[in-house]
Image 1 (cartoon, rainbow, N blue to C red):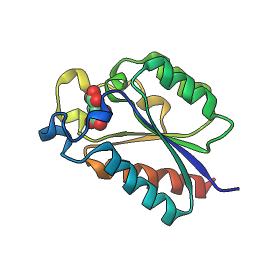
Image 2 (cartoon, rainbow, N blue to C red; image 1 turned 30 degrees about the vertical axis):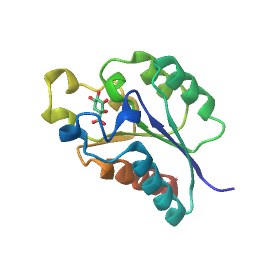
Image 3 (cartoon, helix red, strand yellow; image 1 turned 90 degrees about the vertical axis):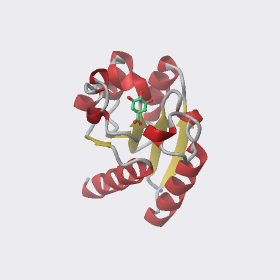
Image 4 (cartoon, helix red, strand yellow; image 1 turned 180 degrees about the vertical axis):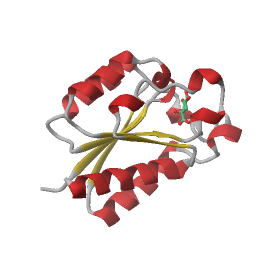
Length: 147
Ligand code: DQA
């Protein structure tokens, strides 16, 4: 069976391309997803990509992921900084997660410096724009090869 990886884009990421272009770049979510799918094809893995604004929706998607997916790539958006519900969902499922951010959260406002997700993720990639996602996918694929 083909390896399946779940990509979760959190709140406000559907607005990429228009939203704070100086911080996030002018590419759209659709463009990120196209690049992710191309890399997934080259790596011979299958991706499901979702964008969810709601904290509960993200938590339940993670809960349902445990039977279907071998890894999760997640950009939790603002939930990164305070969502114990998303952190607990990731801790509850035995699916390795890679946390990604377009911007370098440590170079921005102080409230962004803390991730409550990072301790339950395998690792975090932050600050490489669109490449954060591609590096995140590479990291997940390598991780699964080592398993
Ligand atoms: C973000 C960083 C978060 O602080 C912010 O709330 C986002 C996007 C990023 O990808 O850089 O929505 O996760």
